[in-house]
Image 1 (tube, rainbow, N blue to C red):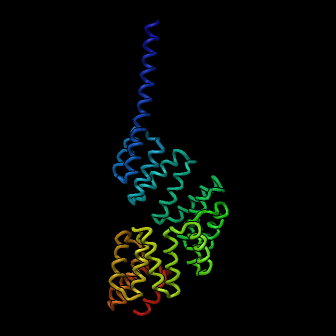
Image 2: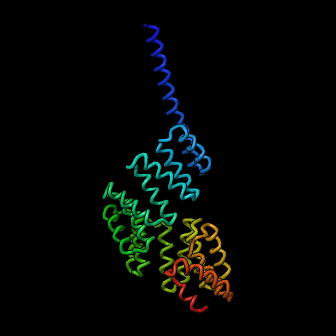
Image 3: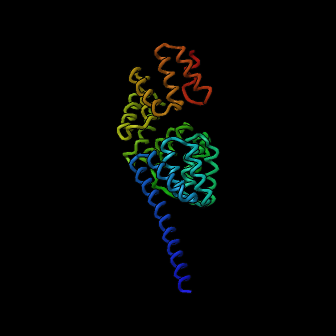
Length: 307
């Protein structure tokens, strides 16, 4: 009898050790993946997360973190699939809902992003980040009045949030509410004068007023603060074109396109470059391509009417 009990005890202890070691092992792979991700080695991170998931196919954190690594690789469908799997395991996994919304936005699936923000707000109506993301989504959908409502709601919950003032100013810009845009940028600058997006948006406002030298100055300030942002370079390139510095402008525009080949504003600006160079066939090609994808983009009508 004692022999049987001892055998059972040994089996139970072995089972516990095995169970503990499995938990430890998957945890170590997760930690190694996190360290690789922190160092910027997204491929190495994915490999470790793969190992963790192989041990535990229900490991929500491994799916979430692998999604983050894939997201950084711009593999949006794969990242969305991993975030979705993490949510399938835990429907209330807020961080996965947040990141999936951002991935949908990055991938251009704006209506899915909007639906995800509604899910987040159903979980917590006071979630500032959810309102912020909804504002970004409405902006991407060019529903600017709805975007204003979302950003205003977020500001009522977090009035010190600089990002909210900047994005509200961006909506003002799209609605041609120049004074409101300047007011919100002033409020943002009072809270954080080192935020690059403030100066980029100020540059766009100066451009609208025909103040191309001031627009250039503000774009250069934005680039000083954020050296690799392709949108800042594209805007600086546009201002260079209007100041007659065509080759400098093209250099900035090409740098922007190298970072993001789908940027329609950069493609438009390249069309403007060729127009100013008198190379009308190339200008027509670029401008028409942009017009077919989004005819609402500014300056297209002006340059296409000259073709």
